[in-house]
Image (cartoon, rainbow, N blue to C red):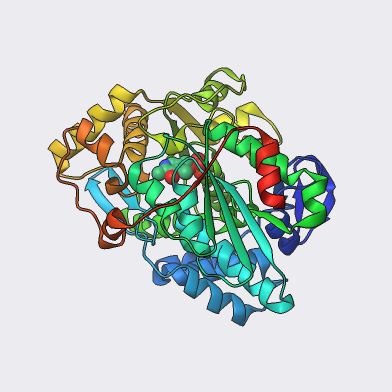
Length: 431
Ligand SMILES: *Cc1c(COP(=O)(O)O)cnc(C)c1O
């Protein structure tokens, strides 16, 4: 499959070029020229495949013309070495646990796949690359773990000071080695704007091989389709129409779901759940898209006021509001409703939802009031132990902390403090 810019369908590039460049020069976004439709015989046998089998098949469909099949099998098997179980909450709803990777968030899928494919290309030509990434919390951790000690790769992570949780910050600042954390006096949107500017900066371009690992990189979206397929596989035997509820910020996750549907996984409908940052719900409900400054909430990884993947969604449906509305419903959930939902689910089912997942659970609950036949899959985007402060606000005080996170608590951390103007970042990268 070739890739094109959302702003110019004539600007065709390879997967490799899109992977390393991140953004096309015209400031659009890379999208597949077409979404590959999977073989229907293969789809019929889906329930007999493992997550890794599925991941390999999808990867071959996207980039089999660029990386030999044998190498795809090896790199995908290594990258996707943890499960994505669908845990039943009640007869109409299951939770898709996407936190079984090293950084305890779904972003491990994208980061590990990117790292595996980039390493494959870099090994062919002994080149050096700097990965520049802005994080609202979990991207940075996933990227830090995904690229730790990968030869030829330096990672620079920008995060908004005071706006990520203590354990999220530890994941960014305590690994060291080839990972550098920049603590920015500003919001996530400021961090993202600085990164975008760096990619368009001819001075940096001349001196550095810069690559992005944000959800703007198409290489993150491909592996995110794996777990939609895996979820569909697990729910299919129930024989009900399936709806997926997606906790959304930058909308990479939702976009991947829409791609998975086009590939042939028969998910009927999607719920885009947001917190108070309600730019997308407004678009779905009123047809008006207006970027806003981001608002801090309890589901901090979703505090995005200008979701960049919106333009990929528009592109997928020919910018037609009615078609998009047919595929996606959207709700905005307040902080109070988030906490209330976390309490309710704990009381009713003894299950600790992290605040992001609680937003999606509340959204799907509303949708199901009018749609009784569907089985809901709620994507659990992170483990609750990453957000202990919010958990305790919901009176959930005994959250199990997995070993791989617990050991960070006593590690020393280091970051470089920086203002939100681009010149400082440029000077740092050039030094
Ligand atoms: C990044 C993140 C999200 C938002 O995902 P998008 O793809 O940006 O919409 C939701 N929940 C958690 C826990 C995250 O880390």
